[in-house]
Image (cartoon, rainbow, N blue to C red; front, side):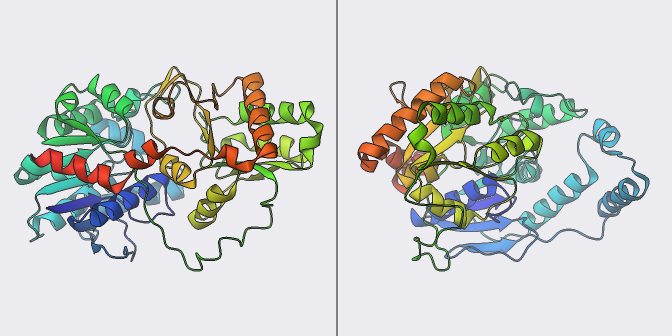
Length: 416
């Protein structure tokens, strides 16, 4: 089977979404499909063992000129025209030029695929908009929806209404109705989006974020760790973006309470928070000054470094926002499953992570339940002291769910 993948970016360092997309692409190839990737990374990037084509940006068009003019006005005169322009047109001039660039490249593509899979990141969905303009592809189009869209369709606390919400809603209604198939990383997200766009319930399948094989330079030297990491300690790691809605306060207070209750743990435990956290900088600075057991890196950390640490810490933490529901499958979930370390899940009662781990999974708490978090960390610490192997995740069912074999079955079922 031939698959044409149209994707925003294949740069794994630019976002968790790109990491997830690249893992999916690699596993499609490993599953034996003939894959061609058209990507709009706008950088000279390739993937080992994958046929890739870098889509060029159209640079001689009125839209390109207007997009640059808008940037000049904003930079030099401090006037942000984006809300007004997007209210009028639905999207930015840059978005229109980008999607035209993607559509133009696809029209010239001689590859004859059985499926066209659109992957995006963040809130752009540019490949989807481009393929929407090409009706000749709709009968074999798989529209992958990685997150809710538009923003007013997010669950609280993420939800907000954009000036262009009507146009974006109309765009996604068309995606739901014209794509032959739709795919979602989680069951809860399919159900959530299907409540807004009912046709997704008819066309939707689950393609979870994938475990993939990563090869880094010097990857055989997994024992070489950054200075802040001591492999002999009881290490709890949260790696990822701490967005405004994703507060680490409950986690940190829970860890501090654990230390107060278990004085001996101050010498042999550590909480590591790695990733951008600008909205929580003051909070993090206060705790880092007061507790040397907490290490915080507020900024980007290379994926290779995080990937190795996830495999060598005692506990990987998946921290979500305080909400009634979390339909998201975090892109790092497959890495945590592969690492085979216990997962401390801090998530709403109704969440995809909790659904996958199971209702009887021991190490789950609401994100702001400080006492429960402290108790869970203490239980994990006691298990680690007794025998570190007691904290292995050992979930073959999840490994299978995130595997190439499962992906292969889902794709073949589409064409039956």
